[in-house]
Image 1 (tube, rainbow, N blue to C red):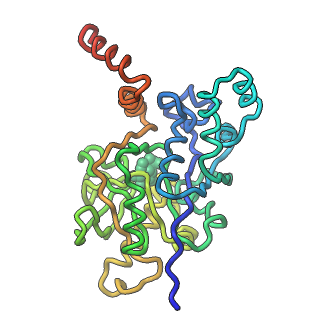
Image 2 (image 1 turned 60 degrees about the vertical axis):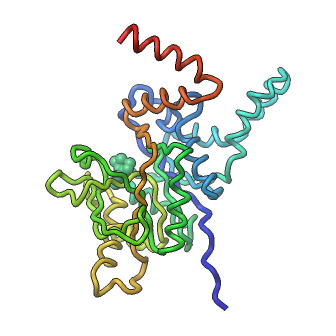
Image 3 (image 1 turned 135 degrees about the vertical axis):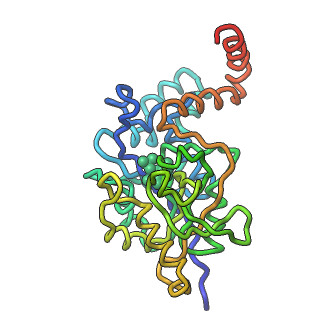
Length: 308
Ligand code: G1P
């Protein structure tokens, strides 16, 4: 009797980065804890994983990242103080983050790159496909991406990356994919990948944004992946090996680890690791909030009209 493959249930969130772009705010506070309106950026990412059905979340952390663990844990002192005051609304907000998902943590130790961070998840993930969500990318909850990537992984097998068309002068900030069309209009086959290419090296304008659904065979490849761009072990380089193996006719049929596909995302995404985009995310999300939006929008209109 054939068994259907296990449903993807695990999300890995690398969160060991130093956050140097936000110094001095990140001197003693992890960048993932910076608020986007009134929630830390990382909570949006965990909520995204949970709404795609992944409620087992492994965070790959490092030194000075204890506040992340505390944020997703109970805070009995605060809860009882709010209870005593009868502040039910804030109590719910405090409990929300600890009730979200089953959280696990592993430390990266040496910061040897994104590929190395993902490799730290191997013992936890085991032999099932899993998702990777990068904390700097905030995907608007109204434009679901991860759910679609999981569907595509279930249909095509192998690994799936999220792609977005970017301006040519932006390509050097991302992993960049060479692609071929498939029968699905939002899905492409990835035939090659280059990490942060120069304009001359870039195979397209399709940038890899921080969402991945990966076949567990990626771990074996990562173990053999030499440091690449920036002297770091790059996830892009490991995926390139899979993409290349599956796009040549000789190995296309049934190679280990499966092909690499891309879901082309056209929704709203903010790079909260970039100060300008971080501010844009806050303004946009604040404008759209039911509680804060009406007042804030009115002020913003006046501010733009009168003071800019
Ligand atoms: C990482 C990846 C890169 C990807 C980007 C998306 O780079 O290495 O391929 O395009 O995330 O945000 P980082 O931005 O961490 O340097």
